[in-house]
Image 1 (tube, rainbow, N blue to C red):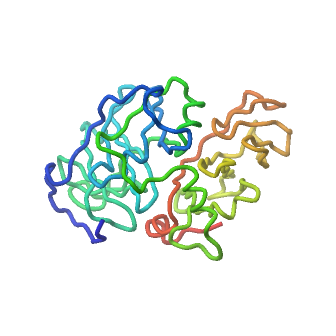
Image 2 (image 1 turned 90 degrees about the horizontal axis):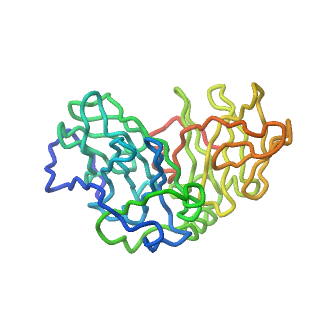
Length: 305
């Protein structure tokens, strides 16, 4: 992609394809390895995974789909390392979304076929065209491995972009090497977990989390906990409250334990699985995993941990 400053131009559907999801092989027949990366979405009570590498090619970065009766779009930007999902409902209209070949603030630009307005991938914010100032609603996602998503959602369906996967994709071992390669101050290609709340934002440098794989923090007065899986491929963020008290967590393999009650939690579902708080659930905090340069470009005042 060539980085330019896109304006409210009028791309044609032929020039920038609007790609719709097609029937994919069943999960058992898909040929994905456990270490392949997916973006997992639950909408309308239905789980579905989208193969990251199938979204790698320039004309297939964004996939329009309907899941559980909800029209959504799933998009991947290799430059930013960010995968995101948005509702295609905006007011009374159902949008058809595509990706421009230009880049803004370190990541690809989304547009809608009807108004040709432009939207930022990390935030869903409309910034050019008739819908500038509006915001696409984010759909919660989990950037994770196919093996983990399938374990969490055995009844999942799968979608792949119709073209072949790119040659320079990303899987869990490559992501781990990328995370562990860095050192010193945050650099453009450092992998981070970004969280925003109100006017505040913070990026957690994943290589700094490696020794303990967890960070108890506070953002805008909200206590949060950031957890990274043992294979470093999955990061989740939760509000660290249980039964009205603020909890402090430590990581034990791919579980977490709170110091206040000794309860054990599944960090991927937010559910307490044993101890005094068994059955309780933590509230999810939206987050973005990707490269530091893209998060910094769209959150110039961000803190970094």
